[in-house]
Image (cartoon, rainbow, N blue to C red; front, side, top):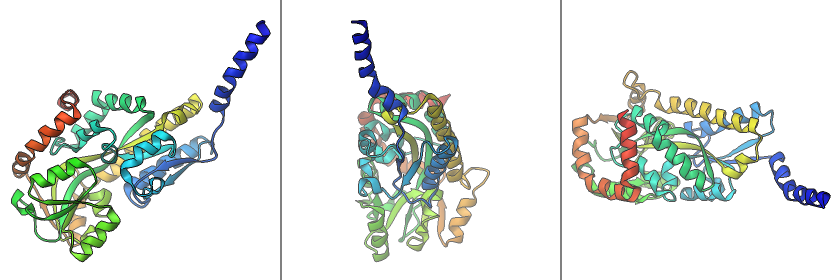
Length: 335
């Protein structure tokens, strides 16, 4: 009887042991941008660190340009949860359609500076998001960054809200961005980046919003738009993440390697997208000017006029996100 019982236990545990010990020949990492952008470079840096430190045991291949989700960026969390992708370096914007709480980072003029964002990511709010995604089958490894999103256009310098009136602005496919642009009197248009570039060239769409170092400089938005306004209206954090089941299939030693590599890659990538945009180094703005753009930098007083118009949007989305979470983030920022 004892032997029979032990046999049953062995049969039950065998798949678990096999699962824990077997590694795939390749692990897929989803990245919605090209590999030549800081975001894509951060994904590759992470994959290289893991491959090197596990001696090739965990071989991560980066799939760029949203290729794992047929270009539909807002499906990324679902494909990671379902195991179509094993890893991701993802924007909170793209995931906020699935996880509404991530719209915290899309609240207009909520994060006054990089330090405030860091405090939120490293504080109780960051822990909350780690727990939230874990419950949904995805482990949050670390926080990267795409940057503050600034606005460019081909028509005129944007210095005050009325300068945005009736401008056709390409936005990402997340409802809060449409609400924000409508509050300014602009005409928001949701389209993917490939379509947007053609629309800019044809003059069908007037402008767009994206981070300076992460997107605007490397993809040469200056070829379409003369004007850029630095207003830091929304920040775009990135998440290094892994499917929870995949992570659990690694040995404890390899789990630590993956976690440490994500933290290291996140710092490397953050430093890259913030370079030239810090108070003691604004060289990125000089690069924009060298590319032929007219740069307008809004003061806090200037921003207050824009912020006032987005108050109804802010209030609406605080209710969607949850006031308790917003309060938690504000508490983190005050520390």
